[in-house]
Length: 540
Image 1 (tube, rainbow, N blue to C red):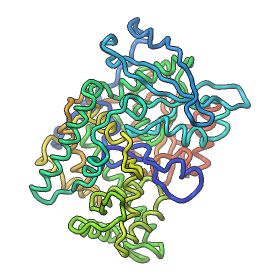
Image 2 (tube, rainbow, N blue to C red):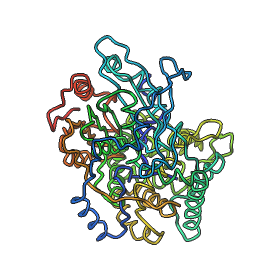
Image 3 (cartoon, one colour):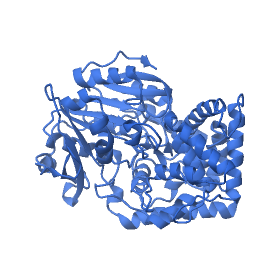
Image 4 (cartoon, helix red, strand yellow):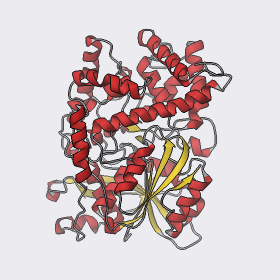
């Protein structure tokens, strides 16, 4: 069963770059990760009305003076300690559970840093977030950014990460245990009749009820706005006058929200794989569905040129490749194939689809996907696709899941009211979604139903983020990005008053550190010298 997120990359062969980002890090199948508090719209007219309203509404900045009730949080002194990862130290901070009522209790935030290595003058802290929502920023910086970012950047900045509230080490929300998550992820996500629809709805209800039972208070306070306000406490505690930040995928929405709330404190911000906060949920879901289709067509064209493509030989059209894949999924719907899994899981249609979706985020995973499809289709061995699916869900070999999926839903369903309120609304929208993506449209439409059963009401609406008065902000978009369509980057750059749009003409999700020397040089120049690119600069 897919989730509303955008994973960054999956495991594959290769060097440090791919090995250190072998888990889903940012956000895929479920689209509406970008908009701040998107309102629920299920009819075409409602969607249009909400989009029009968002064009007028804008995120309002907070007063520059720190409220007296928050001053103790801003004056904290972190007690840094070793945390078992060479070169890194860790600490814990407090933030108010409810910013509207700071005396109501605290939430504990875990953070880590790796100090600037030199040479050169230290430029301060560089906070990173890999997206999700629900991705562990601490895991990301310790496994990749803190050792894999360009040496010149790591020499001048303390590399810092804080797990957002409800995520990983920061009071994680957990909805289901490992065995129940196995059941959940195998639920048929493309129901063919009333019985299967009832089963999917029951799975969504069980998941939501588990979240509500686990964290009834915290679940009301994991919004993107609250996390952005937490980031300002982190900035102050670290002693930085301004926040320097690199955010990917959903992390761009978080970074843009920070800039909108605190434009005077926004330093050098890079928003890579940008989201458009002005769109209502259903529109976001539909456009991301089209983004997956764009990515799949690129994969299909490449696959048909390879001698080992199991979906068609040389000259096979992308449409035929897609039809062949759909036919394979249909077989799995009635006859799952063995995987050799120690827990007895077989490759179902839902797990196979998730595995394919996971590989769409990085063209470096296409070879792995071809091999996995070949094994499943020709050798009755679903283990390769199961590996990809487990990477997406962050399930380890012992059957334990990270809290990524739980946190993802908790943030999305608070930020963004459900795209659909009932299964009947999904059924009426299926033609539109299947037109956007013949391969993934049906599953992604049904995936957008999960927030309909959430125990906490969403708290906002779609709107623009302008961040008037902020320093130049670099917004990065990839032309064939599956999870954050390129038009979202253009839209966000059009909203932010100081944005500079940087375009990567290529495949995959996000651009920085993925092989384009042009992109990397441009962003490095901005981070190190404060020199933003010319608006509209393009790289390949």
